[in-house]
Image: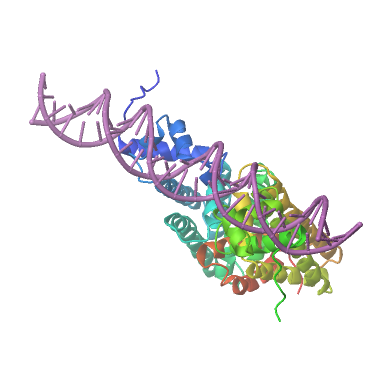
Length: 203
Length: 203
DNA sequence: GATGCAAGTAATTAATTGCTTACATAGTAA
DNA sequence: TTACTATGTAAGCAATTAATTACTTGCATC
C-alpha cells in the first residue's frame, strides 16, 4: 500500500527530501557536524548524488533556512488571524512562536550556528529574513495597540518589539542550555503576562 | 624598556597566554574555525607546543570559558556593590552585563557555539556554570525586592529572573544578527525601564 | 661544569570530508 | 529501435587539521 519508491526522482522533489532530511538530522547534531554523507544516507542516496541537486553543502542549508522562513511566516500569520485585538494577536503570536520552536527543535540550533559565525554569508542573510519581518510585524501590532490606547501612552515601541522577540529568544537559550525544549512551553506561558505588564497593557 | 620575551615560559603562564590568544581570535572567527595553528601563531609558538600545555584543543576552550566565568562573576559582583537597594542593584547589574558583552564580543560567540551543539560536554557545563549562578543571583535580588515591597506583590519571581536574563540575551542575539554589538548599549538602556515596568517596580 | 627536566621545534600521521569525475542506467520522446 | 538527458553510483582527489613523535635546547640545581 506504500507509495512505490522510485529509484530516480526529479530534482525538485529530491531537493525537498534533502531539506527535510537535513532538518531531521539537525535535531541531533550541529549543522557542520552533519556531513553530506549523513544527509545522503538519510535520504537514501549516495553522497555524490546530492550534488546533482545542490551545488554545494552550504546551498542545502540555505534551502533549509528558506523552508523554515516560509513555514514560520505561515504559522505566525495563522496565529495573528486568531486574535481580535492587537493585544490578543500578540498573545496568539507569542504562543505560536514558542510552539514553533518546540515543534522544530532543530531551528534554534541552526540559528545559533549562524550567530556563532562572524562573517556575513547568504545563510546569515536568510536568518535575518526570518527575524526582521517578524520583528517588524510585532512593531506594527504594537503601534495599533497604542493607537487604540491599549498600552501605555509613552511606550517606546521599538524597545517593546525587541523585548517581545528577546523574551522568547532568551527563554529558548536558557532552556536549550538546561533541558532542551522540554519545559519551554510551560515557562513561556508565565512570561507573557510579564510582557503585558511591561508595555502597560490594560486588562 | 619592554619586558624581555623569554623563549621559554612556564606552563601556567603559557596557559594564560593561550587563553588570551584564543579569546582574541574568537572576535573574528567562530571557535571551530580557529585552528590550533592559528592559536599557536597568535601566541608565537609552534603548533605542537600548544600540546605541552593543554591536552587537547577542547581543553583550551574550556579554559577560556572558565576564565570568562570568573571575569563575568567579578564584574557582576562589583556592579551589585554599587547599588543601595535591590532595584538599584538590578539596574547596575543590567548595565554591567551589557557592558561585559560589548567589551568581550567574543563571548556571545562562544556561547552560541556551545548552544548550537546538541550533546552534553564539559564546555557546555562550563557555560551553564556562567549562566546558572547569575540567574540565581538575580532571583535572590528579586526576592529581596519583593520583601521590601518594591515590586508587585503577586510577581512570579522565577519568570521575572528569566525575563531579566532573557531580555539581555535576546537583545544580544538581535544585535549580533544585525550590526554586531555596535548599537547594543544604546538599545539596552531603553530596555531596563521596560523590565521595571514588567515587574511592577515602584519609582 | 655536569645533570635532568620542562619547554620548544619540525616533520609526520591518520582521519575526515566536500566535491569531482568517469561511467552506468532509467525514463522519455522521436 | 534509437537516441538523448537527467539522475544515480563508485571511486578518488585535494585539502585540512588535531595530535604524536623524535629530537633539541634553555635553564635551574647540585
